[in-house]
Length: 324
Image 1 (tube, rainbow, N blue to C red):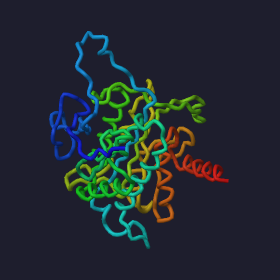
Image 2 (tube, one colour):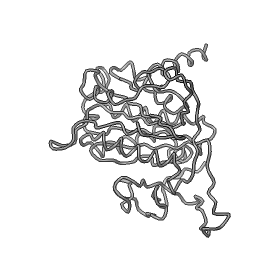
Image 3 (spheres, rainbow, N blue to C red):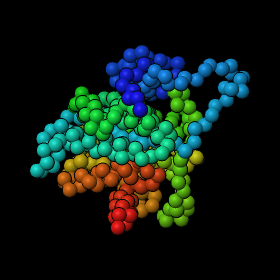
């Protein structure tokens, strides 16, 4: 398979008429309001839709069904590069997280419908920078031949951030784009209908429909922008995430550090409860022995179900059973 290494142009996710031969410095569209349009890579040979008259039958929009979206919000602030991630481990948190994300993405190579699985990897410190901009798995695998190539590229981009920590900005921006994606309001992608799963909620005693859409934020610190800025997490905007007329909170949090850290308590406090186990959708990685669990978390996050540590335990149990 030919490896596509150089995009021919970039198209705004919100307005496909906004076309760039050279991307902006932060890969957001500068013709849209701040952080509302993501530049999506387009390569030579990619099929572009032919313009049609507004009343043309050919202009009727075709909905792409069975789609999945996996969002990773990756803390790339200075503290992610300070010292070792855990005692007796030489790598920094940034090195471990970049390796885990790359490994998890390449683990999805077994998925048969790679053109229906989208990825959005958004780096943040006190600014934002998309790393993978609503690319399909197939496009990612065309661009990066190995997990090592992907990890190296991701780590380099994380190194270019290295500032303060604005969790509020990352969450608000991710929510905005996720809702637009599910609503089919991204012109460069078009109308979509996510794959979904219906599960029984033992708390409400009702079925709940959950789309195959997940957002995972990974951080090692608390909200901090500047002395006069907002230095607390204001809200979980995914409380307002809507799918088929109902609110479904798809945000999960992963904290790298001590459970006694102020940032850990702050992040955990905004997480919703798992609709299956009524446990916080929150994961703590406080020692090197949990690195394997971190990998399984990424795998769980890319599946049709799974929100909390108990869901993760069930995944591990199923893995052990399948190998016996």
